[in-house]
Length: 116
Length: 114
Image 1 (cartoon, rainbow over the protein chains, first blue to last red):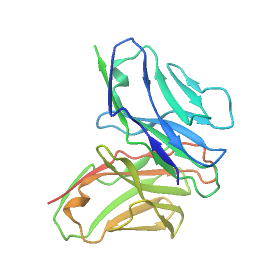
Image 2 (cartoon, rainbow over the protein chains, first blue to last red):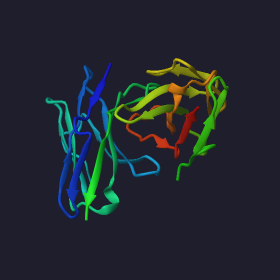
Image 3 (cartoon, chains in turn orange, red):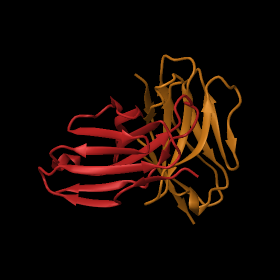
Image 4 (cartoon, rainbow over the protein chains, first blue to last red):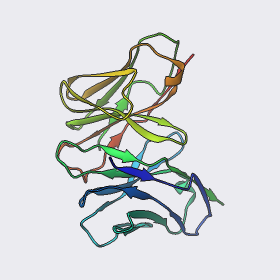
């Protein structure tokens, strides 16, 4: 079974600075998908960014980018120019590529605080 | 936009009661999921349904059951609620056969069992 580990329960960053959230995972599969989800306080969980394991290039979405190290099984999220609206719980998640098995395995989350 | 609607944001029930949590999605998604979210434990999958009347156990199915009589609706049932089932419950849906597509979540139900 796959496991996902987020070793930083809490992080804080000054507004406009850059922060990196860590995620490692364990799998024996060669192809899979990785996601970062954001859950703002009392609000809905939404997708931030996704990465397909067979793609070498790191995914980027505006101020959000990932550092995907397949051999090390590492998938960190970098948030540049942090904004107050980035304050949230961030969850790393893993999905197998198998049809009919589109379940997600989540990490335990990192609570990100933005300091004005 | 996909909308996943959970019937209650907050719910308070008593020990031993039978509790129903309802979830409806409007995007014709085949897959629906129920998760439990606890501090320090992240999201844990309770049950997963990939078609009407079909279900699979997730990581923590004990004490729960589910029902999916229509494609758009997925219900979580606590047969006899206990205090250790006090938690946040999240429903999600996704398209089948597309593991790279995101799951879409509801707002969550914060359930307290007294």
